[in-house]
Amino acid sequence: MHLSRLLLIGLLTIPCAFSQSASEWIKKGDAYEAAGKPKLALEAYRNAEKTTPKDSALLVKIAKQYGDLMPSLAGAAKKDASFKSLEYSRKAVAVNPKSSDSHLALALSLGKNTEFMGSRQKIEASREMKTAADTALRLNPKSDYAHHMLGRWHQEMAGIGGGTRALAKIIYGGVPKGTYDEALKHFGFARKINSRRLIHQIEYGRTLAMMGRDAEARTEIQKGLDMPNREADDKDSRERGRKTLDSL
Image 1: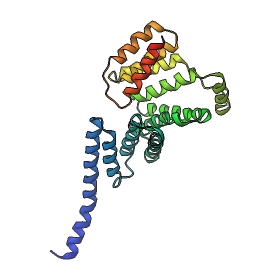
Image 2 (image 1 turned 90 degrees about the horizontal axis):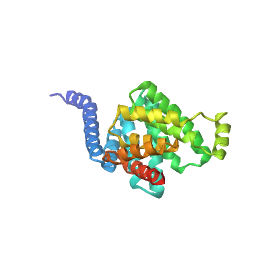
Image 3 (image 1 turned 180 degrees about the vertical axis):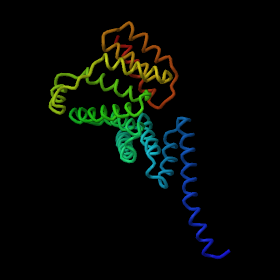
């Protein structure tokens, strides 16, 4: 076969080889994620990113793994993971602004970053988080986690103190209307869509506690505590549930 023809065939097969390589890395990452190994999943997804850097679904996966790593980290490493999660979720939105998952990833990443923010930054982030969650839900009305994030937003806004409320008024131009009733409604939708996620059940119960409905709260939180851990955030959710239950 003529040398130029061989070179042409080789060049034509290169993109295919790259694509297959990325696909295989993604499959490996998915397997590691399913096994609860976010560090290995992240490594696999980052390898896939080398050849498909504009894949919004992949960028969402990377953002999620950085977030999932946070409970196992501390100090600067945990902070860096939260920033990386936010960085990749923003990339996902930029690549595909019509993807519900991209906006949801942004909302989740903003929520995780508030741990490292001051009061003003938290209020500013909460505003963007609500916008992202609203967009995610509009693009996919069956997104349980979009409902969850809106529930968390209402939960936070309904419970802010006087000083933070004054700051929110400055930033928003008025105090955001967040209510425990709305929070309960969103958590209710979230658990109806996906009843296997204990985070929805526990936050539903915690919201009842915030509303002073202690007897119902005990029942609902305990239901969540009785559920098995399935996701990286479940341990932290379980701890929040126990603390609330102990305070009743």
